[in-house]
Length: 83
Image (cartoon, rainbow, N blue to C red; front, side):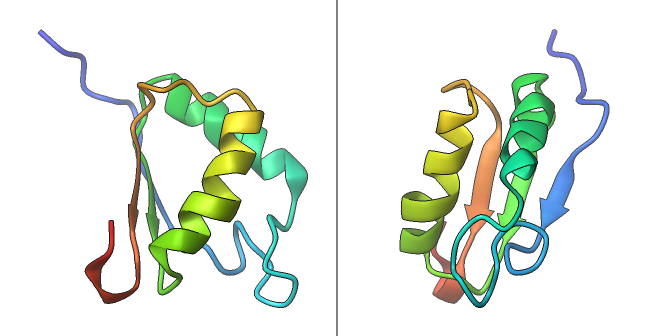
């Protein structure tokens, strides 16, 4: 029997995660905070108008560098339905 996660996060990328001006992760510590939540088995979902390429090339590498486990429940819903 799997355990129900204690919480889940549904986040926009622009603002909370990435600077819309610099197109980089805005606050470096946010990656380690999100990794801790995801590695504990809690879903982290990015719901964004950004492209799936931006998530794949900018956001996910920051999370991996911060220690994201390959089995952590991280998902993205991107522009034009990309996921």
